[in-house]
Image 1 (spheres, one colour):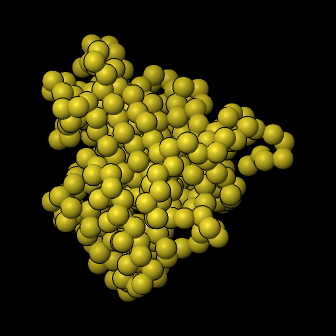
Image 2 (spheres, helix red, strand yellow):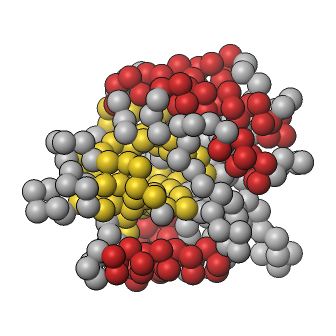
Image 3 (cartoon, helix red, strand yellow):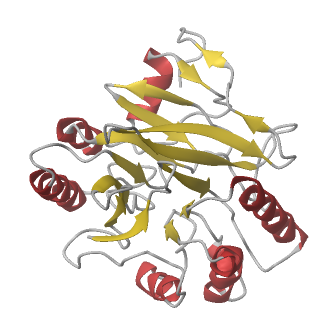
Length: 316
């Protein structure tokens, strides 16, 4: 664990989440994606940029590794620390997660880590955020949610594996011990939504849109349960489903979709691309919490999205 990030003197720490860029070869759609990111960064001036997967669509890139460099070039040139988790389209064909992580680590602005070799996936790491007095005020977990199921009996997308859950529990436990047996307020970033995102929409009041069914894995490996047991997790952030952007609280954890950023992939008529913004706040007594809103391509800020109440006609 490292602690290279720090709250501002006013007690805030701002993160911009870009997701599902699906960058290809720098075509006009990619340039629109870059212009959107430029606008969001200019308006929000974050302390950290996070890409939550499908940064590139590797099967349609002439040189996927160069496409990745191009996709993150704005983040690198901004001077703002950044990191990217991998999605199901980043490493298709002959593109490997190991090599794509090596490309990510070529950049001086990236805070990413490859993660332990004995843990499933690539890019499982935790970054600490120092408070105004130098203490550990928050922990940010970055998790590789995989791509596709490897079991013939389970169709669909992959899931967070047992070794990753064990790793998360160990990290949360160590942080708690170091923090005087108090859980460290935490956020988690990954690409594919957990199955509980579907439960949230079906069972709880949410805020935002669900224009497509939740494409979570068919197998529930228990990651959410581990997060609840840790008593540390405040919120999780994913992408993957391009026209979902809702958030809501389930068992004390706020589950959030990002807002799809890329123009080189499917969307919905009149549903603008954008980004999610997360602002951590450290109170006078050291308690950490967060607010979140959407920033759209046209510059509009959505801080009060529409309310959804569960009903039998909208189950996902």
